Length: 276
Image (cartoon, rainbow, N blue to C red; front, side):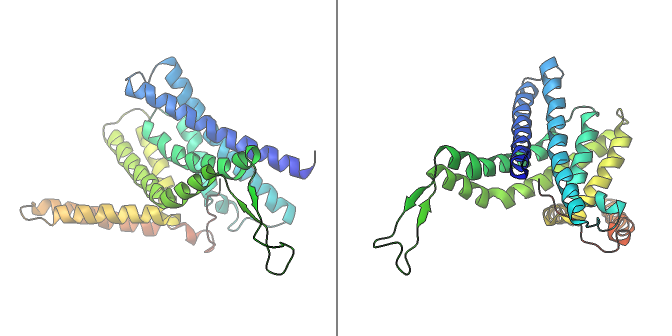
């Protein structure tokens, strides 16, 4: 099979997994609203959603690995460099969630990413395929100096492009906030000694630590959370014990941040950004 056809097939498979993921999240959300999230269809959609998520990031990781193999390039940082790749992190986390108890919050970040990938694919591939861009020829002979042939996109393509441009950054901030909220939810589960909670909080803490190192949106969400708690703790009437506890929490968090700096072990190489 020619290389171009193989690339196109991989791209189509990638977008199909995004579409399946979104459908499964939608279907599972309906069951969750009806408080029937342990029904047969709900459980099937939940597990299929993470199978699709793992397939999505697995394809991207494989494409990146194959590209390096063809050029002979080595992964920066050696084996640890792969763990610093955001696509690998989301792939591994999807596999973890696949075998863990159900949690709607765990699905939402994957769903938000998929919305933008599917929207971009529709705009860049599907719409131009079914409704080719219209050619616009400037007044006069286009072959003359300065004459250029231009094309107009379908209004739907322009609308999708505007949507992606306007809401992408804010949506990534929402993803970061959801990931922090999920960590808090897991911490409470661990304190209540729920099933497999301590294993999951340890794994997810490592994942969120890596996200903090690579994502300005996660850093910004943590900064906003810290500022809000500082304002609450700094209010008049707050017991001194609460302030001491909060200062201790912040100090422990900074010590944990310094002790788990992955750049110490990856020779200072920049971590690859997520491109799925």
